[in-house]
Amino acid sequence: MSSTERPREDGGTQPEAGHEAPFDAGAPSSAEPVTGAAAAFPAEPGIPSTVHLPLSVHIAEDDSDARITEKLRRHGVRIGKGMISPGVFWPALIVILLVSLFAILAPSAADAVFTAVQGWIVAHLGWYYMIVVAVFIGVAAFIAFSRLGRIRLGRDDDTPEFGVLSWFSMLFAAGMGIGLVFYGVGEPLTYATVQPKPGWEGSEGELAGLAMAQTFVHWGLHPWAIYAIIGLSIAYAIHRRGRPVSIRWALEPLFGERVKGWTGDVIDVLAIFGTVFGVATSLGLGVQQISAGMAEIGVVDTVSNTMLVVLILVITLIAMISVISGIGAGMKWLSNINLSMAGVLLISVLLLGPTLFLFQNLTESIGFYLANVMQMTFDVGAYQRGEATSWFSDWTIFYWGWWISWSPFVGIFIARISRGRTVREFIAGVMLVPTIVGMIWFSVMGGAGLFRQLFGQGDLVEGGEVHVESALFKVLGDLPLGTILSVIGILLVAIFFITSSDSGSLVVDMLASGGHPNPPTWSRVLWSVLEGVVAIALLLAGGLKSLQAAALATALPFSVVLLLMAWATLRALRIDDRVLERAERIARLERVTEHVSHELAGSITDIPELETWVDDRIDYRLTRTRGAFGRRSPEKR
Image 1: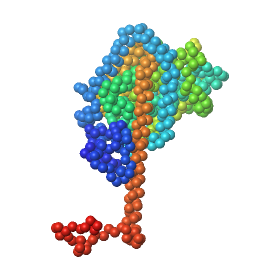
Image 2 (image 1 turned 180 degrees about the vertical axis):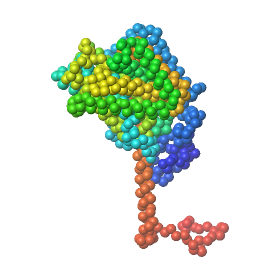
Image 3 (image 1 turned 90 degrees about the horizontal axis):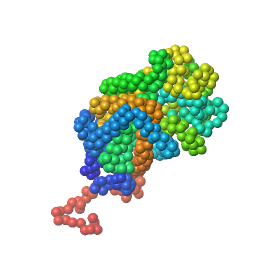
């Protein structure tokens, strides 16, 4: 064993600190000859002897802040005053503040710029977004079904940190958000009535089925494939390799040491942009729905921009208090309340609404989804031209941009809770569980809206328009205990944002602090406040259109980062698979050698012919005792 290696927990060796195991490393760095079973399987050129970094640089739970900062610097992270990474913190903060000030001081000009950006992206790059999301689904499926899926996100002997049910519950919490509540009733209803997708034809029932299928596409496998790719990349880097929690390390297989410099800084800055604008978009949608619910139950008469700003300030203040209380205390209680209220709302609508129809709607919608998912995945409206541009701008392309901009937050969250899972388990859980939950949610909520419009009062379409933000409360209001359910809906939206802001602020702060798991509270409060400021700026600059444009604009550069992450993850997993395969061959050879040696040693006395050849007795003849100058002839040696 060389001086640059030390024993590993699994019996092998790993480089000491300062002698990392790069992905492009060749044979082991030891100058000593490789012996034993390992000599039968020499390391291949370009394949490292291990993908794990030394345990001495891994950040432990009981490490002090000073110790963590020291370890981060050993990874090559630059930490400045205030425990921040200057190359990430200041560029991200300055650009976000400039965009916010522009939107607040010149809302009309900002609205024009945002609208132009959104129109250009949809008109010229809509096809790109559609292909990118399809690529993510294909890459995730390939990894899950290939031999790469057996690799564990951690050490080979690590066990999952959480049980299956707890892990699924947290995935469910990550999959639920303001968007599901905001669009739960209104989205499928809009597609089936006033704004069908260009090119759709058929009866009222067929349009409703296609509307549910399109909604499943927007909220099912497609967005969660995005989250699976970024989550897997980060989970591999932090749990398998031992790197800090930061987006840059997911690209180490491609860029190597360059991720420690300005290249890595740019990657993390783009991730911060996406998270901040993604959280701000969710907050903007959330306050619009909260205000609509308050108007529906009679708390306020009209909704104004002043009211929306006040709501944002109140919710941001509550989120800031949660941030100060600590992610463990604040998030734990808020998440439990959140899931409980969402479950109560879902079950109440299912049991108190048209129950039989809702089950029928779920069954039939799954059929429409399976029959049309491939066409919907690649449909860019090439033959509908102008009308398709507007529809895709409002819906599919906006969603893909929103999911991509939101992905750093969700990806880091699901990566941190997935240590010990195999890659196959990770992808299956991340893509299937939230997809199933989303299908059930929209089948119940959207089905209740469709039933009311098509077979009931028919009052959800007003003036040729569906008011998405208020449709939920109209449906809830006519159910038994409708006012109570509407209040629960309002609180649910508010708590969804508080939990998102709390977690999002932590993620942004970690990125701006070089991956520090316990970044300073002052900067976490700063990012929480900044998310509220961005939401106010976007609402004043044009409302929903500006929110959509911001999501699309921030997603465009980060989509390139995601593609690189998919490539880097494939490359890392393929190298890891070859390292793992070599280790397995060595282990098998050692077991066979030990077994054969044991059996052979026990059988020598039973086989005289073998005993003749294998004579391990010590020669005690007198002639073997020689003097100081006695030498045997060469033929007797």
